[in-house]
Amino acid sequence: MFLHHSMNKEDVDNKIPIYKLTTKDEILKYYNQWSKDSQFNKDMVDWNYTAPQNVANLLDKYTNDKSIKILDAGCGSGLVGKELKKLNYLNIHGADFSQHMLDLIEQDIYQSLELIDLNESLKYENENFDAITCVGTFTYGHVKAHCLDELIRIVKKKGLICFTINEGIYKKYKFDVKIDELSKNNLWKILEFTKSTYIVSKNIEAWLCIAKKI
Image (tube, rainbow, N blue to C red; front, side, top):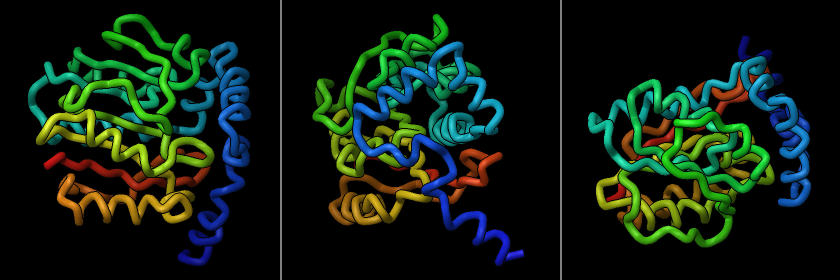
């Protein structure tokens, strides 16, 4: 059993075509195509992409205030926003770097939508949000670990940051080092850090984390 499991896991790099892309332009172009006829959303259903639900449920476990201001960073087509809305969160703001993905979002999920690149400095003021979700962005060719510094900057003290990291890039992109550094420097406290389901049909898992800003 173990052998079979590790054979399936080791080659995460090649499981999905987008994982081979490295530049922002290539990835944007890919999303432009992927968003046509809502193919992206169909694929997420077919692939059994569980990360949005996992993150929404984890955030909900640590807060009982449904009015908190949430930034869904890298919101894509709004899958996390949908899950948060089901849990009665109403003050959700979305941001993504693909306008084509933002165009797929249903009305009445987000209070605002912004086009941003999470690898750059973010235009939000310090301590602007009560909580941040970041799902499916810490993955191949996408957003690097330094983004966590910006997420900590824009979340309020004692605010929550809940995110996934694709298992294939966790060490490769030095997320392990960055997470450790932020904890050692007392910038945040990790509340939970576990391996979770991610893209079930492709047998890809992710690290699922929730941290509180100190």
